[in-house]
Length: 250
Image (cartoon, rainbow, N blue to C red):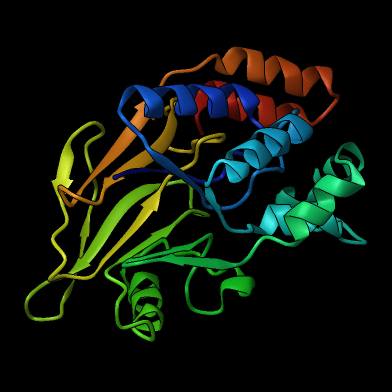
């Protein structure tokens, strides 16, 4: 079974649809959305509606911090990440906000554990952005003896961590489109990157496909109409910074 793993869509319907089409072309049979459906982008309602459709077809979903902020926007904006929460809240229906609120923080499917941030206190939104944080995350996942694969979002980067024979944590930066063997005798943690807001100076959308039969993980990059997504942000009178970010991939 090929599981398409998508995170941090951030209300970017253009990138979301491009990744879904790419995944179908590459044989995806199930989808997992790893949080932050909304925030920053211009089309939160359309993205949530598409996610709801996928959920009705068997997709797996977890909640992200921007989803939580859209449900209950902060009283005072103190960070860039919080700056679109109230705007997003107002553009979602009450039913969509209720649906987001009911999403779990983690989902387990056989040997796979899905989470937006870290398995360690998932509602605290810790970033898995280095070997130390990855080790903490993997240690927390050890509470689930059957888990061999942890898939995360949140950091907008594509990285693979694993524990070798000596229990030493190893970090690997993948090449897009290259299938990587991920045998079950090791423990693996992957941050699958951001569909809707890449930040590595490459505007192409990010996601990954896990082949549960071949035990291979392939990180993907997908070109999409990022200019249209940026135009939509400007037309919505959201900060130009978020439009610039999509055009530059920064």
